[in-house]
Length: 237
Image 1 (cartoon, helix red, strand yellow):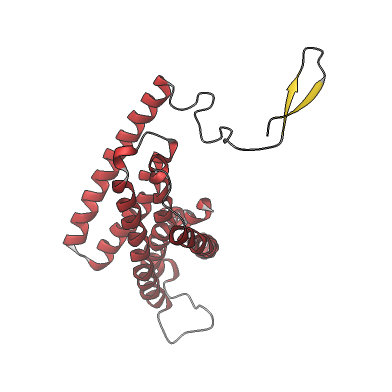
Image 2 (cartoon, helix red, strand yellow):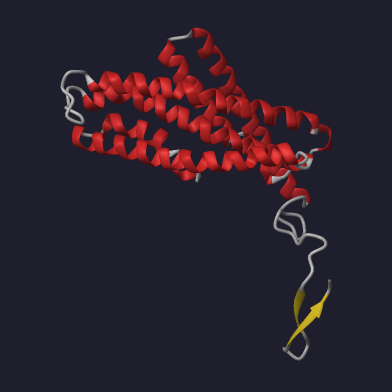
């Protein structure tokens, strides 16, 4: 569902450079696709939260993947605030839904910014849960590809925070955003180095090392190709 969740941020980048008739279509399309992604994400959030409540935390090496939960709310908040801030320029004096008594661009701007504020702390809450979980098992962590969740989902929260600081014209929030941006760059460098090192020493992308390796305890029939080029099923359960 992540491709839909980044449609809004993408649209806010290209809308200012489009002619009016195209900008309006892109704006509405972005809101609709972002909403579809967010609704599906909400269902996934429910299942994810239930798992956290009834089961143990994931194994320490895979806990960085918990940061994936930060992304949907972060990118949605970013999309709502940024597209809302662009609404006055996109719609201007355009009549919408038959309403002529109000400047609809300004109305949509207020609604979009407030909706983004409503969502952003949801993303921050999952960030805190993920961070505490990772720190609790940091001594037992080894590199897996889940480490890249330190970067991409948290970028959504960072972008949403930047939009929040801009909308509120808050120097304090903008300072926090600068720190978050520096942290993202550092984590990208750390993950890139750890990824290259893991490939070099055979920790990943080697037989039996990646997430798709065969789990222990699976029963069934294992198909082998014998010397006579005939298929033989061996029960190894």
